[in-house]
Length: 470
Image 1 (cartoon, rainbow, N blue to C red):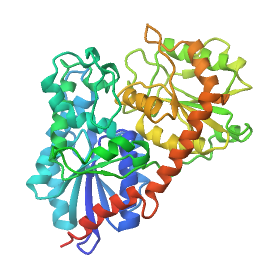
Image 2 (cartoon, rainbow, N blue to C red; image 1 turned 60 degrees about the horizontal axis):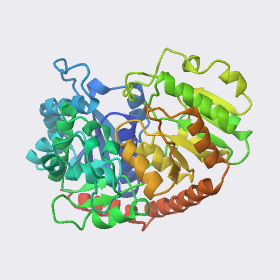
Image 3 (tube, helix red, strand yellow; image 1 turned 45 degrees about the vertical axis):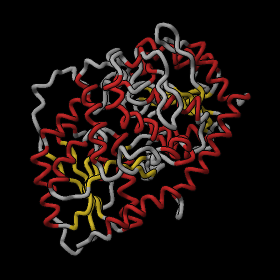
Image 4 (cartoon, rainbow, N blue to C red; image 1 turned 30 degrees about the horizontal axis):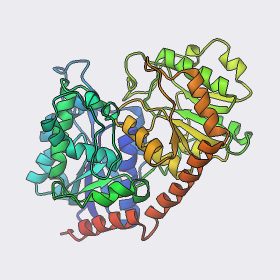
């Protein structure tokens, strides 16, 4: 363990999954680099993965990691949602967490504890130990607002949210149809829903909430989030925090393929680190891309007819995803498209001059990465809060186009081709979203430079923590 002479230290307890680990890691790097605050990651052994280990191993030496011992989840139904499993794992890990935090208190200047949105029950321990407790919310203000209002919404509503007669109007936010609200609350009879309401209540136990967003992308919500009656902690906008480290890309051929393509001519197609399409949907997407006649780089994954996030903690597969594509598709599109099984270096792809659009699942990490590289999107949400993000990106922020889903819940090839052409051929719609995303790229960059809004917010918190050194 580090000596007493080191800088102040912050402990963080992120949820597993790269959508949580990456922004936590970027926040940690800023604290280390700009404010000389060391950070300790505390992780769950039962949710460990190769991707998580590689991520933690790549962090600077002033960012260390400790692992909570495994807890038994054998009594939980095999079909329990990940939000339920993670919430219960947090509760059952509290004794071990107490031991870790006490050890850190004894051997380092531990000045703060930061929980994730699914690990807020850890506040029970941090507060008992007198450690200032904070929440880091890796998504946006729109989703945070829903969580903060969820306890009251639960008490005042009896129907399923998808059956709400009118769109939900959260203060400072655009109206949201009930069917577009985050997926974990769409079945009130499921334990997952109860946990979401519980987490919303526990958010209020934080001393402050840090959010991975910036003012220019959510100006109205940012204006009002701290002006409502005092119901919750102060909110700090600290984004856009996107991945800064580069993976080993020596053997990645997609970048050399992009080098040969015209400027802004390629549509990048990827559904995040865990997203899966159904067998029928992957065929419709393939046909739609072919019909559009546009260049594309598609990260293809084996489809799943179970659920869209079926591979949440392990995105590898022994199946060949290309085998699920229509007969002859690969040969017919070989001159305009490139298929990349399972993974591509997304940051490098989005930064490439040939990339002109991103067909995305609207995960918030991917959204911020696309915005910060000035790449407009096609919104194709799958799970979590992605439908909410899609509404915001298309109807309010206006940096994305969204295909119309058919009555059977499938995006049809003709509709896909239409939207792809609208974006990539730079007609009026494509031009509009392209100009808007370039504006936001400037705003996001400005937020994190010295004296930028997000930079100042992080600095304010860091200075408070640094002043608490014994």
